[in-house]
Image (tube, rainbow, N blue to C red; front, side):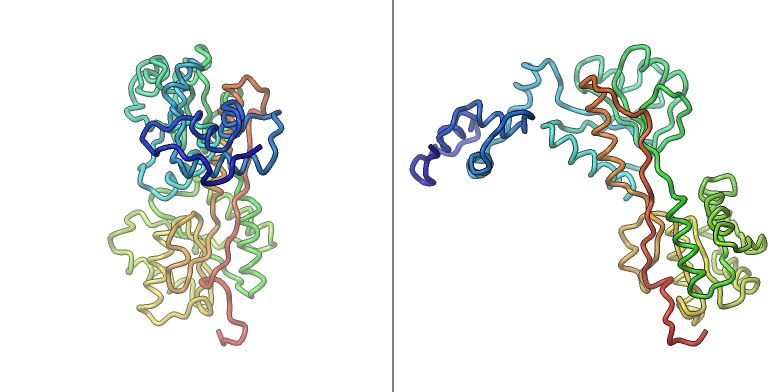
Length: 352
């Protein structure tokens, strides 16, 4: 029988244990362990589970991960390696997904750097060999054939998120933007835009996968790619307004633009405001990529966006499956989505 709230209270301290939580609720210590570790296959009454969770929160109880790792011979931590700026929105959203997934297993995250060392002595490998991490997630990270071969040969659990890896033995989380791009182009076509330009920064070009997806979507909607409206900005920060002037002279209004960069799209919106160009009546703008500022710009920016949080969460789930010895798919593909906002939603009552 559960103890009533307030009947028995332990003195709050920094060393609250699962035994204290069990005593507070009036259940066994094993029951507390089953609930807090979310052990599968154990039937716990909903009211008992809720009482344990509330007591743990009330007593400020946190599992001792160090003691647990010693019992299980595990570090209870996952290494995360990335080539991206760790403060970037893309990385942080993926990391948020990883964090939530590992928290469900009472794991923590260890960020690893200097991955560019040789195949055997990179920091994340040294961490794994010294039992400081139990597995590795590579997010937006380039991996050499030598690194992959070493980890496979030594049975090191790892997963790759959003990186081009050709080795069929590697577990990979990939994304597909085909349907989202098709939705974006169809969205513009349905509103009467006959010319859909493509603007690229110096970091992307016609060999980047975003441009072929644009071409595929244009042709899939029965439209034509206008080569003179495919513009690359080699020097994005310098002379941008002059390049926009030249582009608008060729494109003429009304026209629509798909940009391979959020920053480029934001700059185009700013340019349109300075020049008195109406958005989206005269110039509709869609960016490929996710941004925390898409809803905050004026007008708000339509985006074809990656499932960043889901990529991190699914990658962590895959890694736990590998560590648990479960048979899983080698590749998981997640879909991008199209988020139409004010920069491309044409006001039917406005005159072009």
